[in-house]
Length: 289
Ligand code: SF4
Image (cartoon, rainbow, N blue to C red; front, side, top):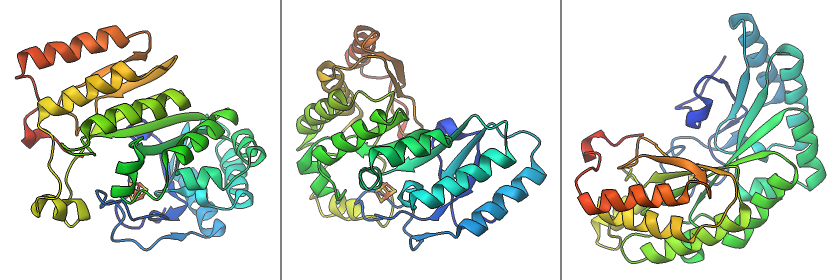
């Protein structure tokens, strides 16, 4: 298989066959993100992708999950994605699920029938980085979409009966907008009711616009305690059913997990315990991506 540059995948795709359907991110403009800065976005040819899949078949005896990278493979034309999905089914009859990163724009660029077609051909999960539900913060981070777009995209993916895994980033509003971030994100998540919700904690990457803002004093990072307070505010205000919640990423100060709303009380108790003791946070040196 041919891989270009650093390849990222969600933690739950750790054992998947990863195939780059696109190179880089079609947006590539978020102020905090350096993931694909070294890449110019392009869509790979279907022919090359199928060649990579054939090579993977020769190498691996069993492939149960495939993840289509890079940043936003869902932006490909539906007809091309279907060709790739048919290739996966033919080469890997044992494959149970194909996962893909989606953006609000790429989900909204497809109609419901197209999304259902993709589901029927094997797309089993879309990973959607929401980051924040606040329009003010989304604008400040150059996300290029509004909370309304995100809600519409999330509901559309769910309407196509594709599992939806979304992520938020604690601390993304800084000290000034921490309450806004918690409350508005809770509203968006409650509206979407995703299957999976992951909360990461903001990490500052070299060379990003956000790093410059911190250096110039325009943005103030939250302390670990403030991250916990923001998380508590978010959880308190989120009303979902059956969403599997994880905050156990390498970037997090403390790990939490449960099913919202069943475990909401337990998670809030755990957060309060951390706040009362105020000394259980992961050392900054051990936070990483
Ligand atoms: S956060 Fe996601 S959408 Fe934004 S630039 Fe990075 S990969 Fe692209």
